[in-house]
Image (cartoon, rainbow, N blue to C red; front, side, top):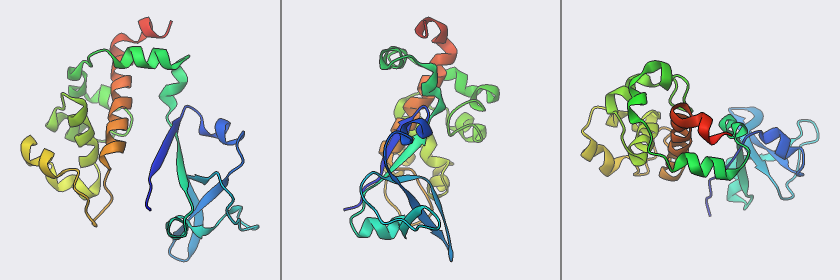
Length: 191
């Protein structure tokens, strides 16, 4: 079974300090390095010299280990509770904000891709998720196609370069909408 589970935290280190875990290992050629976000919350053999899991995370998955990716999403630290987040997400985004480079440069995952955002002009959560998919190398070839063609093939799995899965892209699109709405309506929701 193949899984890909991401959990977003305002401060992942604060959470990981409370829960015993093993840091996933990733091979780069002959070198081993710490996986950027992956951890195991179950027993996993640890290399006593590196402190990392003994198997590369891909090999570990094949052997039944269950890796979770614990991600830092700093915007969550601005909220006192989930009710504030939910209230802000209920607001209609001011999509026109995505036409301004100075706004795009402040946004999660798309900050270096203002040219793509301005070209595609997303106006729905799904379209924003598609923009996130297209900034990845595996789907960049779709950039110059019309929306109806992009929507047909953007979520198809390929064995090519890195691409975003729809579930991740939707979650990240919602985080960007949270940021947009914080810019447009923020102060009334944070009190």
